[in-house]
Amino acid sequence: MIHLTLSFKNFLWILLFMMSMHRARASNLTSITWSHATNSQQELTEVLDSEINFIEADIVYGYLLNDTSMLTQLPIMAHPPNITSDISLQEFLRQIWDFNSRVPKEKQKGVKLDFKSTEVFQSSLAMLNTMWNDNYEIWLNADIYSGPVNNNSTLPVNPNIFLLEAKKFANATLSTGWTTRWGSDYTEGSYMREQIDAMINGIQINEVKNPLTFPVRAGIAANSIDELSYLHDALKNSNKVTFTIWSSVGDYVDVEGLRKMIFYFGIDKVYIDVPDALYNQLQLDNDPYENGAVSFKPTFVMGVLVLIAVIGHLLY
Image (cartoon, rainbow, N blue to C red; front, side):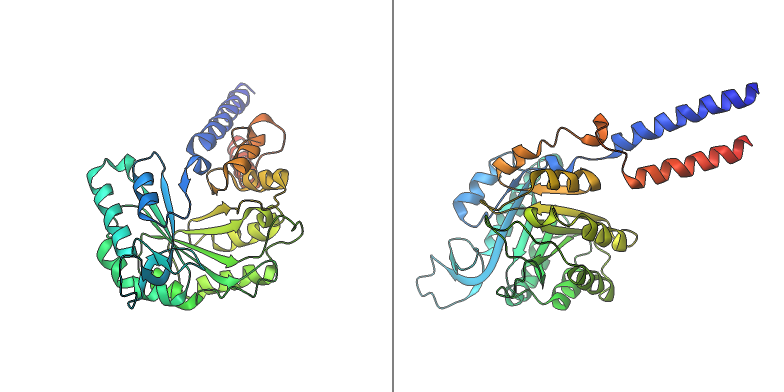
C-alpha cells in the first residue's frame, strides 16, 4: 500500500512535469512580426532597418521603372495588377543576402516570396539557386489551387510545377494556398473538403517532404476548423505542418471563431499576418487553454491518457 501511494504521488509529479514541459516547448509563432507587400526599394530599406522578423513580398513578371526602354520583362517585386517596380527580384534577394550576412543569426530576417504566376516562378528558379544557399529562412509561397468562395477569377500557379521545383530547395518552407474571394460583405464560406483533398493529393503525389505552412484567409479559416484539422492530420506524419493566417484590410472576420481556430491548433503551429486592428482584437496573450476556459487540446489529452495507461500497468 505504501509503495502504491508513493508511486501514485510520483505519477502526479510526472503529470505536472509533462504539463509544464508541454507549455515550455511550445514556441509562440504568433509573436513573429511581418512586413506585408514589401514591393519597393523604399519599403525594403525601411524593413531592413526595423525590428520586423519576416519580410513578405510579391513577385510578378514585369518591367523595371529605371529601364527606360521598358522592353525587357523579368521577375520584379509587385502585386497584380501592377507590372512595374523600382526593384527586381534579383536585387531584392541580393540586399537581403547582404543584410543577413552581416548581422547575428538572431537578427536575420526571414523572407516569404509570393509568386503570382507559374511563368514568374519558373523564371525565378535560377536566381533562387544563385542568391540563396540556406543562409537564412525562406518561404516559397503560391496559391496553387482554386478555393473559397467559388473563386475562379484568379488563375492558380500550376501545382505540379510549383511543388516539383520548390521541393528541390530542401530547407525552404513551402507555403501553398488557395485562391480566395472574400471581403467586408462575406460572412459565409469555408475551405471545402474537395479543396483540402486536392492539396493533400498534390503534396503526396509530388512526394514533398519540406516543412509546410498553409496560408489561410482569416475570415474563412474561422469557419473551417474541421477541414483544417483534417488537412493537418493527413500530413503531420510526413511534414512539419503549420498555418499562416492572413487577412486583407476590411475583411469580415468572426474574431471569436478565429481565436478558437488559433488556440485549437496552438500558438506553436499558427503564424499571424493580419492588420493591426484585427491582431489586437485576437488577444493572443489570453490563451483559453491556460486559464481553464476550455479543455486541453486533443493531442495533449491523448498523451496524458497514454501516460496514465503506462503508469497504471507499472503499478499493477
